[in-house]
Length: 219
Image (cartoon, rainbow, N blue to C red; front, side, top):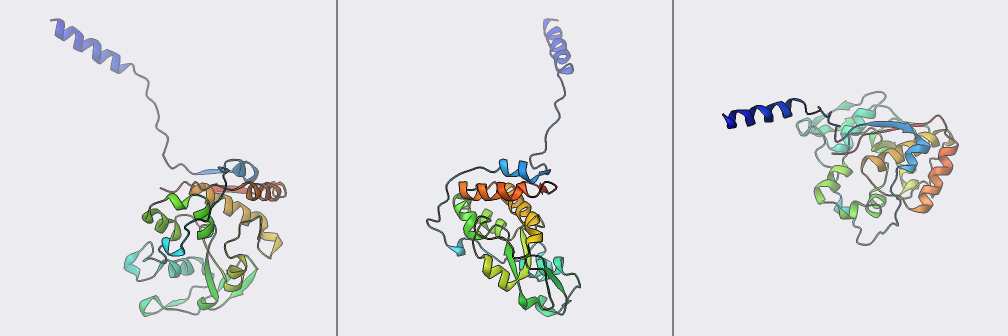
């Protein structure tokens, strides 16, 4: 009899427990760029031990069955006029808009796929502590449109591994977009920024009151 009573009390206590809604582990966020800058972890950067080969790219892309590398998948996704896809995912024709320098490009060979936050910069900002698998995921990230950008080879060379304190796109009208995408990428991958970088981002954000930052933390 006592056992039955105790079981009844336990069941009753469980029935009145409040239901707690779970929060998605990787919830997307949209916020003003000035606020987004304040979310960046601030830390000193170190290039010690950096090797570009620590980031495997380009891999077989999001769809290994299509025979295209990440590079070509990005080119296909960003084409304003789609190219013809030949054997081995060889691209011919097509048309692209390089937003960094506001230039039309009509040959895939004239384009580079820019890592919004360069591989060396990501290493400086936290990727040095990642596994090889996570670095590969970063280097081939197609989960966010801002992560990889098809731009003219010359603008990609001009940018190199510089952060926004050192380099902004030559087209001044896209600076707000660029800064927002830089911050979004760092937040997505939980990368830090040094004090000089943060100061430059804050200054840029002051001139972009309407600019929003949207990002979803990487798995």
